[in-house]
Image (cartoon, rainbow over all chains, first blue to last red; front, side):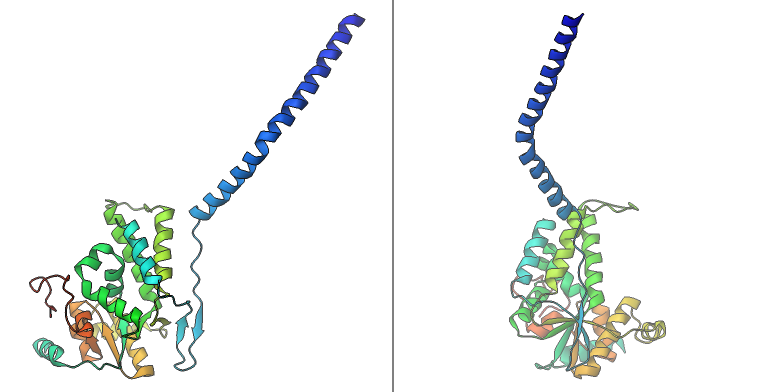
Length: 89
Length: 195
């Protein structure tokens, strides 16, 4: 009876030890992938939820008109054409 | 009256120092590739605004109108008909919003918020000028700008608005502003404003 208990105890110890070792090994592989998975989730979130367009106005001192605030860029129309060509091709 | 308007329209000279209000149809012509190829005059006009040959204005609601038109055209392109729920993907809508956002950055083009307009004023313009309510809003915005600058031209490709609004404000087809039709524009048989 004593012998059987000892054997069972040993088996249990080995099982616990083995489980611990397996967890340690899998953690080595899981951790970088978990980080990648989080990154992928963040990217997906950024792509799928469009950023709200800001409608900020400034008062033009010369005319008193409320003008939509935007940084002027000579390349902007080129980007408009490029995006539109991709979308409506 | 209508015939007289048409006759006056072609003979009137445009002031080189005036500023221009761009109607939604010109913006749409520039953005949508098929329209860009069809109406090269609108394309040319915006390119010249970018270069600084013209100082242009537009109202903030024209951007909303443009986005609505882009969505409509994209749905048509996707073959969607009579579906009463949203069908465009988040990606497609995000792209269109980006297009509008980039368009706002066009040099020498300012987008302003017009004065609050009462329904009575819109009704009055629809009644007296015989135009649609959306066109009445455009006309009132241009009149609003005229109070500030004195000399402002409504640039539109809409034939009716072009002729009828002339009773209250100076109007011009893009080709009147750029001088002559670009070589790649549609023929004189298809366009009554061909020069």
